Length: 318
Image (cartoon, rainbow, N blue to C red; front, side, top):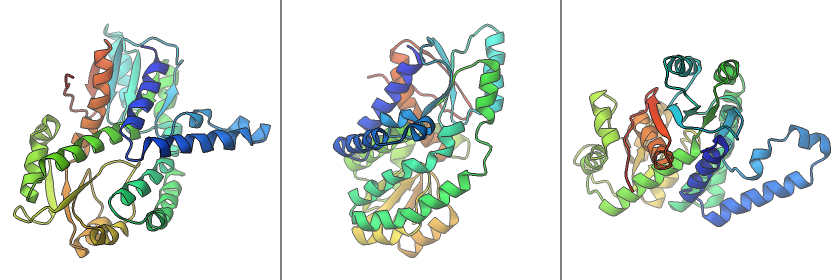
């Protein structure tokens, strides 16, 4: 496969499992194309044209010719300067790395992470929060994340990849969409009665089972083993953590338990105050599952997958 084909496949798979409807995602792209068509020439020069076909600002080819052929990828959750050097060292030892695939965004994709957070509005609406309320809740949080991203040194890993001429891309929200859909379908199908049942279901998946041995497996942070789960909402996509104000609205909408990758203290306190149970599935295990579901598509097309940097690699056959 070519790098560009891998990139377009990531977008396709992400859109296929997007919590939003296909029509709504396509409408967003139509608006973006209309906006671009109306821009002045100097504005078009500064515009990231990938936005015309890719609704995920945190997923990009960061360095490399899209036409380059790929036979082997080095891939992991956080692929930074050290991992770029690792790719170069592995290539020196005789196993040429054609492409580095990161999950967490780097470069311009990291700077644009806040842009995918509007997806969370539709997730909240799907679980019963009025869309106007969901948009109001997310607005200040999205701006907060945007401001927090501004001071970061986004391009360190990208610069290293360029100097060593190793192509680098990141696949973030598409992989998160895959894991969110996978776990939500699991919970909807199995209908766990208690929080202990929720944790048990997660541990039946190999990524979470392995994470247990690293003290990073599923854990109940609000509630107890015997407490009934009620309606389970999986919240693992949309860039990064949303607003803590969502828990009151979700409790009113009938959500009993949230399954998340991770949770901050402010969010934990709000969930507890509103009697919403919380199960932390585990960050690296959840990211691994989402990325694995995408990497399996590459493996089926004959690409060799070399995992590192926190990726718990398990292949699923169709």
